[in-house]
Length: 175
Length: 200
Image 1: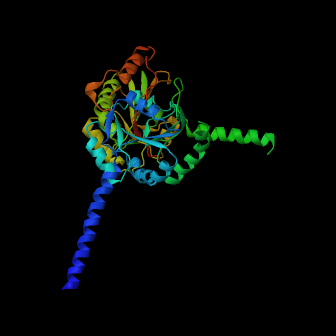
Image 2: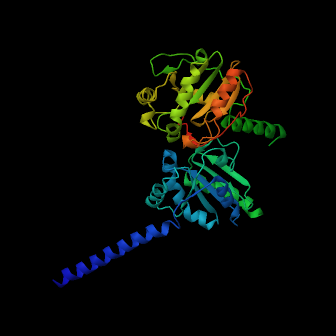
Image 3: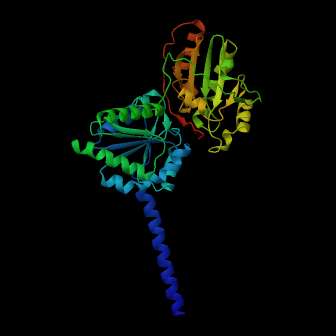
């Protein structure tokens, strides 16, 4: 009887800890709810940060390759943080789908919330490269003063992100 | 490494890089496509035979993409209207249906029937048409004039998500200019779209 009681106490304790941990992990992942911004406001956010490297990632919950790639991005969270890279996610989901965007980010344990662009046309695309076709996912790296250092369109693996950071390290050191 | 070797290596790299970012420029001729293409109606036309007397509109599209879905009604309305006015209108799906099953020919047929297409809708069975045109996303539109020169490249209007907020009708204005033989006022536009799922 005493053994059964001890077992139940230990089991209850484990359940309590895992429950609290689960809720805490979910709350810690997203620093803020995603927000809808006009493209010029998105541009302002890119140039406002006082970090040598800002990574802006264009994506959407309806974009298959974006969804497939997202775990690779999350896998890079520690490396990006250690490298001092500021990460801005910019979604082109419908502006009425903020909850869906946040739900996706939560499920995928994203440490970042997302901006959601109010525009999908040239006002948004002019922020980035003139050579960009508009296909997503797309990733852009900006220097401290908002100048574009490197970009690509299409999904990449964590190793490819790692290689890009290594390539950009020299650029960052110059700033 | 000798100087000659360095120069040749650089040239090769430039060619490779330029091939990866190929795109038609305004004024370029419509690419020739030798292969017969499979239409959803069972016909197998050559692309060149679908040119219109007044001009030709090639639309790279697909079934699964939400951006195509949002613009579908507008694209089809313009396609149907201007096909009757001498513009050869052709919708092309270059996507690999292995990535999205709805992009297969049956999905295309359902899409065309539901939306009331009155122009050819073709399967790009190798994705080579998209490669020849430099198309990279859906939807992506190429408008050629009566001489077969590219005069407009881009999207339908300035509000892909919401038809009620359109203020600039880029494609309609370009089509009207081509019919009149006038210069297209805005020749290139860009917008978010779904990446073309190229067949390997």
